[in-house]
Image (cartoon, rainbow, N blue to C red; front, side, top):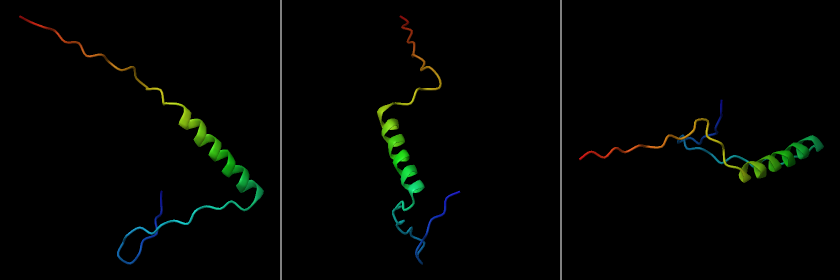
Length: 59
């Protein structure tokens, strides 16, 4: 579930950026940054092999 703050007109309000303060928060924040960098290096593997289309020519 995601919550979003809205103004009186129902428009979304910008969220404040997260600022880690404790040592644990800082370690988790650094870990997340590393995970994002690793994910950016790889393309996801398809779950199913792509099928090649076959075309039959008739005269």
